Image (cartoon, rainbow, N blue to C red; front, side):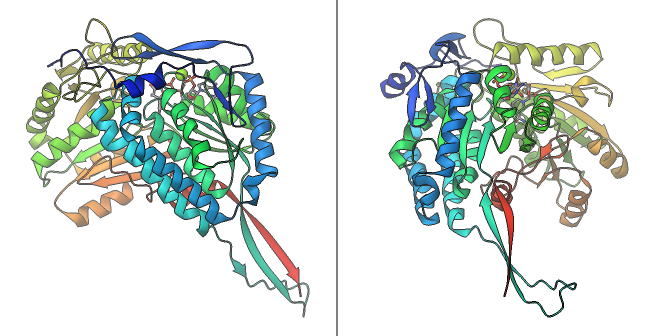
Length: 502
Ligand code: NAP
Ligand code: MG
């Protein structure tokens, strides 16, 4: 595994932000946590502390929810026209674009991902998401409905629906795409006129804090967006169980997803949307363009170090091409330059934390114990930082942990198949259903197979294709609801039926 040399340091501009004292954004003000507590933020490539942020807790969550409630019900935000709201979101996107390089550096330092990737993917996708959602602000419409009301013969009615914002929303996001996950959540909430309390992941709070500084500049009134840094068990739990929050939108593990549902159910039955884990099948059919499929399979698992909920972590290859494909993917794995995300040649950085590194290595050990073999990689890199080698596992069986559980690291488990029917059953044999991919030259076959795969996204001859206009979310235990697209707008609004007797 080639290791890139010591990283260049981040720009002075970025460091002047990172080095600041980071507080909570509540009601338009940056404030310390009520407890006065702070916690450390680490560079995962070195393990060194790079910043300290406020540790928000229940008392801070209460203040933030009060501010969001006030902003939702009175003051300038509900009085804005849809066009004004849309322009503010567009302005936010422009500001983000002006600071693209800074955001890419922050993301790299905080999460570990290559700066080049953050600059080409994370930040531009976030900008595009805000622009897409800015357009929706003026297009949120109800219907007029011809009603009959048979039990009132002769009566005439004018009936219509309004789509209104859900209200105060709590948004709890993970660390794998810190800025982009914030954008996916904030964009539709702002477009529909909701107000927000955002709880960012403890591992990666910096880009959301930086974004927080842009809201005022974009013209958003105080209290519309509140940002809490803190821990899931305290701040996150306080939000999901809060009696005055109307909806909680969560992205993260299925395990915490269950806790969110429980907290919502036992407090005020707030609405819940969930974007959870995955164990996505990537299927190569015998008639595929094999070199393209090999490259695609490597991208499917190694993009973002495999820390993608939709990572192509189960690779299905026909027996006749199995050796060629897995050797090809292993070759890709060996060539990836692993190193500090700020180094321009780095293709893969560290995992986000020691906890995540240990978790992935536990899966590698269990794979070995159960009889799988690492064709490439297979272990952690000793020394500083939380690096794990890009890994290709073969000799897998359907009952192995590495086939059944979400590893959330750069580890693909390859599966040999013989018959198409056996393939479909095996691909769908998971509690998850987030994504799937098919590689084939026969498009009729691809469309047929796409219908039979139980997943929220199916990619054909491509992988990891995201667009602000395309809904994304899970079947089965991969979640409730969808991110992005028109569907996200629907999930931040509710329908009111108005009936007028004429
Ligand atoms: P996680 O615990 O599910 O964290 C996601 C978010 O939920 C974080 O903001 C977290 O806060 C918060 N949270 C944790 N406990 C909570 C609670 N009781 N109530 C409310 N919010 C709570 O994920 P993780 O521990 O970071 O990662 C564990 C595994 O989850 C990964 O290995 C991976 O399998 C999966 N994961 C999936 C996704 C995805 O995109 N679907 C993303 C990340 C992780 P803290 O950051 O303070 O804990
Ligand atoms: Mg956690």
